[in-house]
Length: 375
Image 1 (cartoon, rainbow, N blue to C red):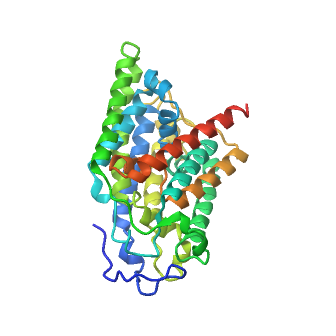
Image 2: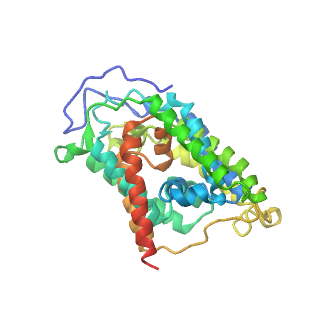
Image 3: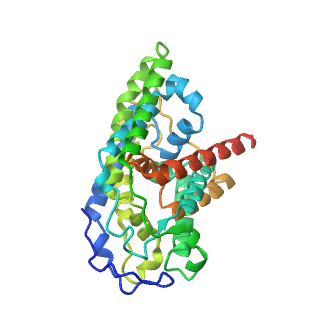
């Protein structure tokens, strides 16, 4: 699926490797990036137009994992579990997209250590809850509705993500001081672990159904279709686009690689195709359309829900800037944001299951507690 590089000669990590060279076009995949990005955009659009909800991976995951007792007994969480379960089932069926030839063979591409995964998970969880969004919520959905708040959020986490990747890269002048963040060999995936994790999410969905039997409104039941569609499209889009590959994310964030021609701009094609699809969907949402005539075609309500739940907060405050800056650091360290991390859970990545995810939940819980004390 991805092109390979024949020269796997190892070299010192204190400088850019000269014996292991590849250029942009060895790994730049604009076609699959555009296809996957379009699917991600369709996922966002389907959840918005069917359910009236935002495709925010960090919000979905933290609301379910950080408050499990409430989530498993609240009938309004049905669509969230349906989306997450469908996402994980789809991901488990697509493990072939989880690695490329650079992982473990190209010394200029880092493999995060157990310490890095733990710190990264915590920072991503804390940052995304303080800033209320990640690459999907602020990036695809927020930019799709032309939100100034999301525009600032994206600039912030991109800036800290890029800075973190450059400063902690194996080829950085600081490499000798950041060895604790890297390991030499990639952790093997354990398909059984992935199947178990996916099964547990399906069981959680069934638990909500049982616990809330007789309490579901007609609207609660209707939202399942949009959630299932969004979950499948989101997982497929992330996998096909290559955004589940830590190596692919690193070679985008490492802007220093532009100088030697090995930078991979695939993420730009992903966002460049996802955001326009999301933008078009918002033309059917009251008060968000900007295209001429959009007010006439706006829906009075979502297809399967009584109301749209679109954020209207336009405030650019300390929580947003601090939270997204912290998220970007965690993103640059662990090379995973919430959506791709959940994909790695479904395919059985032990580092993500046992380190990144628990740390993400801890960070999310701490941020929610901190925000509750601000009011």
